[in-house]
Length: 250
Ligand code: BTN
Image 1 (cartoon, protein in one colour):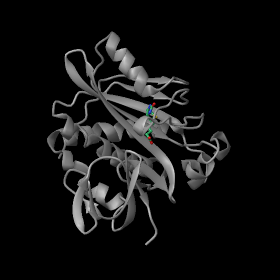
Image 2 (cartoon, helix red, strand yellow; image 1 turned 60 degrees about the vertical axis):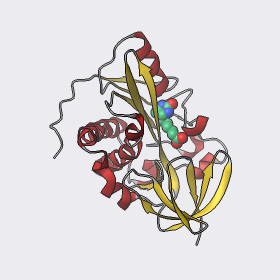
Image 3 (spheres, helix red, strand yellow; image 1 turned 180 degrees about the horizontal axis):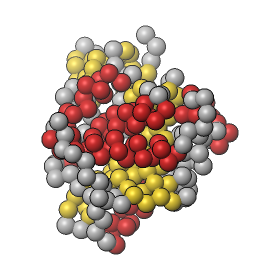
């Protein structure tokens, strides 16, 4: 059982910001922010993604970041990202009955297309180590709002629901599930492991491992206790902790 929820930290909502992760990092440099402080925006002009990429953040989506001060080492803090992926799946299931799959490590997919991305960054905030968990979800975003290839790579929730989805309800449910997940995570980072394994679409199949611009074919066997991808590469089983995968046909 996780600790009861006591959300006292504020949630700020803005129509548009540069990047919710960046704004939280700048605010942190100016003043002490409460743990759990959350910034929600409905558009980003400079959304940032993993591996230094940009993240398209048109009107129609929900972009939010939550500030945490996990008192553990950074390797353990890295497990917050897969845990956040499970929290978002739970929230979306609750609000609109849609269950995404998780592409290791933390992309949420619907019918093989990208619904949500998660960027977790750690940074020094005054005397302590802070982590900002940033989540971008395509909620009512029309395909035409994306440029080029993204029109077929991305998907929005509303493409899988009978009516447009209430973005405030999505944001509130995600915050609630992140709060619950974080309470459980502080007791045991494996708190979402069963759900992660169930929702993960990257296992028991051939994949391509991509790290530092290099691609290696592998067979993804499962997810270990640290949320690493257990991959069989040239007959050897290795835990993969960095980079990303693309899914290959058998
Ligand atoms: C990825 O898929 O590469 C991760 C994307 C993370 C996007 C979210 S949107 C909210 C937060 N603010 C950002 O600038 N990025 C994250």
